[in-house]
Amino acid sequence: MSAAEGGDLDVIVIGAGIAGLCAAGELVRAGRRVLMLEKSRGIGGRMATRRLGDAVCDHGAQFFTVRGRAFGAIVTAANDDAAVQTWCHGFARDGSLGSDVAVGDGHARWRGTRGMTDLPKWLVNELMSSDLAGRCDIRTGGQVTAVAVDGSRVRVSLNTSDGRAESLTAAAAVITAPVPQALDLMQAGGMCRGASDVVPAETLRQLEAVAYDPCFALMLVLDRPSLVPEPGGMHFAVEGGGPIAWLADNQRKGISPVPALTAHATGTFSREHFDMPPDAVMELLLDAVRPWIDGDPETAVVERSLHRWKFALPTTVLPEPVVAVSQSPPIACCGDAFAGPRVEGAASSGLAAGRWLNRVLDDRAETP
Image (cartoon, rainbow, N blue to C red; front, side):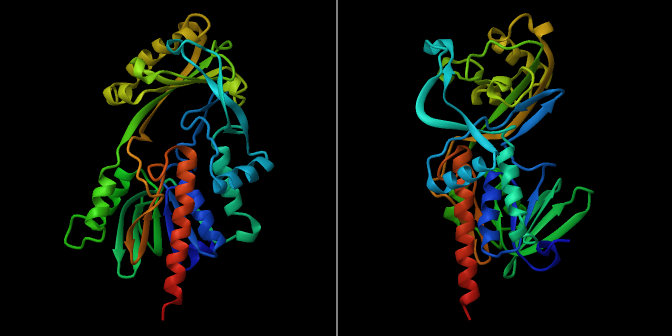
């Protein structure tokens, strides 16, 4: 048992995606004892990579860029350890924009060396390094059901991976789940819209305004190279009305040993077809990407899979990098809907949440 679970917890971090991992890094380096809870079996959230037979497919976030200094330092260190590398400096556009030639803008597009999960895995290795050993523990496969205030501490209820109900307390918490799910957890814990309101009304209205687009991710393993042009990624004109927003060849991208496509549907298509049977959705999307498959899809596609992201892309982004939903005990919400979407936005939000909690916890320790 780690020190994080063996004694009093300083912070519980809900979600082991890029935001949660960056928040945990800030906290652990400041000497906090942290427990991370992740409902999936693996870490990384939407920085997701999947194997289909011999193929490797990134089916969530496809790349990331670097604009800020703090995230840039993380990427530089990960690059030094060969966990990430530059993919390209721009992508091809679909025919409706008049060109299938990659358009560069000078900004590097980065990817995980073997897939997008490589950066989250590198961050986990950093958390578990010898100089930080014992301060952080990560538990996967359990479903958090409620977040509540219990006196001066935070109480988190969950169903564990083996089906047991469990209750944990800590001095503070970070919630990195998509905002609608975070609100559900706080509502279940009696933190809002109840007799024991904890979340201020204005903060609640702010969080309730956040919305997301869903996204279908279709993965196709091919028996021959695709017709997707270099560097292996294509943006599509969403305003054109087609169902596809993005198409990538994971082999040309450099992560799959065999030809394999990832197609992301538009938010409009995904909303309209969200409850349609998966096989029917796959047929519609397969028909849309047919021009980039060499030969008859009936024979060229040897394996297929569909993933449905319910909260894929925030359509409302809050201006603050972190929102404090409680000051005592300190509870912060963060993620890609805070001060900038995509991978860097989520990472920067997590870093900000960790720094905020460190300041609050330090101030409380100094108060007589």
